[in-house]
Amino acid sequence: MKNKIVVIGSSNIDLIMKMDHLPEKGETVTDADFIQVYGGKGANQAVAAARAGGNVAFVSCVGDDAYVPQMIRNYKNDKINTECVFQEREIASGHALIMIGDKGENYISVAPGANYNLTSERIDEALPIIDEAAIIVMQYEIPEETIKYVIDIANSKNIPVLWNVAPARDFDFSYIPKVNILVLNEVEAGFVAGITVKTQKDAENAADILIQKGVERVIITLGSQGAFAVTKNEKVNVKAFIVDAIDTTAAGDTFCGCFAVALVEGKNLKESLLFASAGASISVTRMGAQPSAPIREEIEKFMNEH
Image (tube, helix red, strand yellow):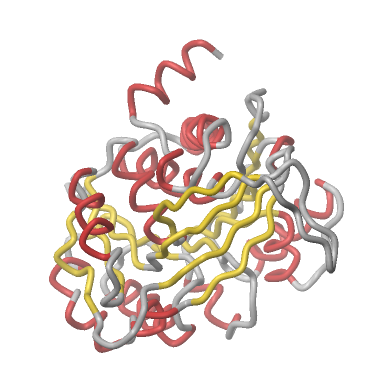
């Protein structure tokens, strides 16, 4: 039985400043702490899935800057198949500037760089790995045409697609019925469903709209309020684990990676939600995107203790 998780998406270098409060317009905040780590929603989800015990292959484009050798070494250290991490010439890798305030809230700006070189031609080169997938995981830091191309390929090969529509931006949403699993936060759920989401009830309405459009499963993450999943036949809620958050930057990415692992292992919907929520809860207690993703033993210990 196939167990490979193929993550298709972005790789970034994250430049992070942690400060006692986020600046207002025109304000300069001094005495910040600086760290440089590796991120990008695709890479974060690949790392999270691999550390959670998944058999992961990553399809991405990186640039020709000095960070790249270490970035790829890190993926290999997490036992990720990097055969289809393509190095592009004369372009920088994706970069993210992240400012984090005292309660873990953040401002993020992203320069896509080589991520936008992940075109259908590159996907064609990755087809031998895609053919081995038990599930394909994507986000939205790569071109729209690439997302649509992958969805069409996956549908033709009966490979389920988990799409985390993050960040939320314009898309040809006629493709939504072709997606098996949508993972969204409240803002993304409202954007994709075309309604305003301010409460959990609104989020449930958004999920119902997407199910009616043909999506098999909609998972909505609600931060400290937990998460829930909706299918045509069931609704499953899980409460959030109580932790002291210091950096929420990659919580959603960790959730997606862990959820994919649980699903491929045959866990049911509630078990998968709990496993993913535990992984995400651990991640927010640590700084940085990929450095915060927990390993399998940590997730299982955390769940036993909570």
